[in-house]
Length: 102
Image 1 (cartoon, helix red, strand yellow):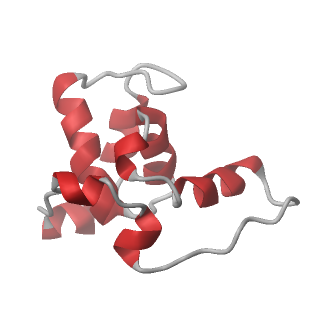
Image 2 (cartoon, one colour; image 1 turned 135 degrees about the vertical axis):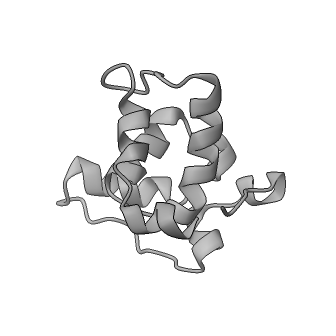
Image 3 (cartoon, one colour; image 1 turned 30 degrees about the horizontal axis):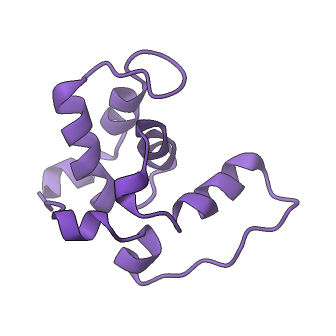
């Protein structure tokens, strides 16, 4: 499995992936605007709900699973925003091919 070093946690998803997304359009849904916003924030500043939101969208899995698992190791049923275990559910919902390869 890909392991996130402390240095990588200081980077944004845009930096890690080398893919800068434009600023979201004001007419886009709150979910889409939030996804675009989160891509510009260093991972070390993410809250558990931020990991959950992006993992539910199946985005940036390679970079989000390792820190999400670290959170889940100490708090498996963390209520990141909606209900107890919502981060766990988002993590379990990652496609099987990711888990097979990692």
